[in-house]
Length: 124
Image (tube, rainbow, N blue to C red):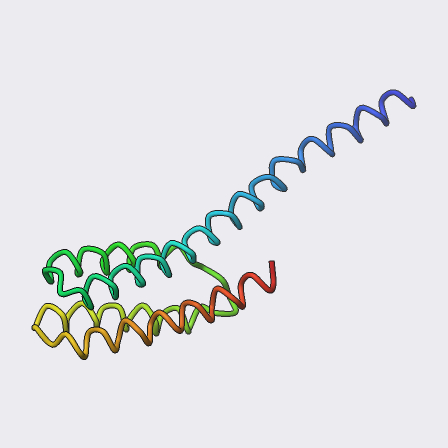
């Protein structure tokens, strides 16, 4: 009887282990997406300030827009949506040739994503 109980306890523990590892992996992916988004926005801002071709800047902005979709954290979701919209605005403004408005939108979006990253890191 004791060996059956030990077996049941062992099976219960091993069944829960993949869920624990999956959660840790999920957190790592969310953190990587947040940090990657911040890095891409900084890169786009730097390229724009250096006067690099707008197609190249917009490619980096699009990379940031794709990464930010993976940054899912309930406490910052609405802020993420607004900051993501600012990335779209920045891309559109740079495409139209309004570098100043595009860079302003990038700076605002960058500040917002940096704030969200701090909130996320504080909770994890």
